[in-house]
Image (tube, rainbow, N blue to C red; front, side, top):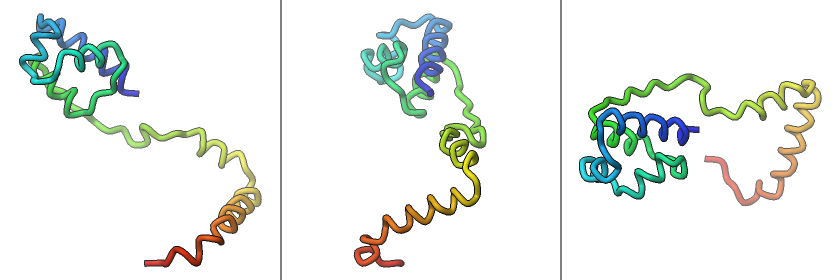
Length: 108
């Protein structure tokens, strides 16, 4: 979840820059209520928005994607708990449930 991290980064950067939310809003062109919502963790900013806010505070934001981050591993773990036979059975049940759509959908 980026919200809590974004809130911490933004609050910290703004404090280090010695800016109020109103001043940051003026420098960044992003409305003060939006900044307040991000800092309170009520709004999840887009990457570009957070980058713009941090730049207005005089900081650069360098993002490095970590392979596999953002993946819900619970579904993977659930599948791995099944035996191969159970996995094939579930796949077959899912395939059969799509039978009514076969006449509607055409392969490309």
